[in-house]
Image (cartoon, rainbow, N blue to C red; front, side, top):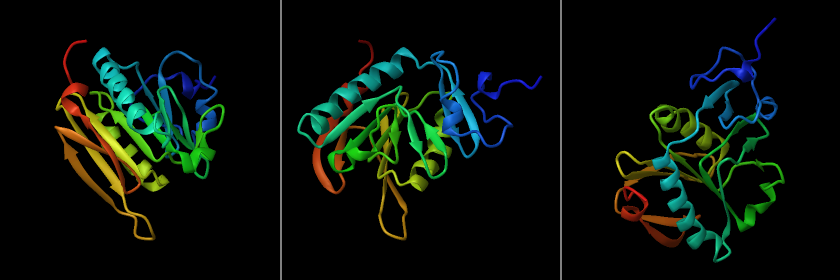
Length: 199
């Protein structure tokens, strides 16, 4: 009997080619995050308390700056993002879809590239978040990608330029984090509050 590849709990890619987002959706609901990237399955354990605190604070700030004024919708994990053209799918920590692009929000998951995706690093996911997932988001047309590092109290912001010559540009923030929708400056987030230790 061939073992079911969706039952494995590795954080490394499995040796089974052709895993798609549709396959991931058939996996048991056991609290683990599953993602299909480049035909490989990635499984990650539940996040730490520190991770969840940082995520919750960022979500509150993004709701205040982006959702409350009507710029679009902020969603948090577990939320699936499917890239239908390639069959890939991920579950980012947080994401934002602008009002103009709300058509990609379906009842079950997001179908297409969000405007903004945030991943909060953990020891098990840091390499993948900085490499494989950054490349995936760039390739799929995500406009802005934030890599949140709770150990360094920093956020790397990757922005893509449009047109035929898409290329990534990034900056690192440790004090005040600017928030934009496209090229429009909306406000900023005080990172000292986001990364505060304790409750």
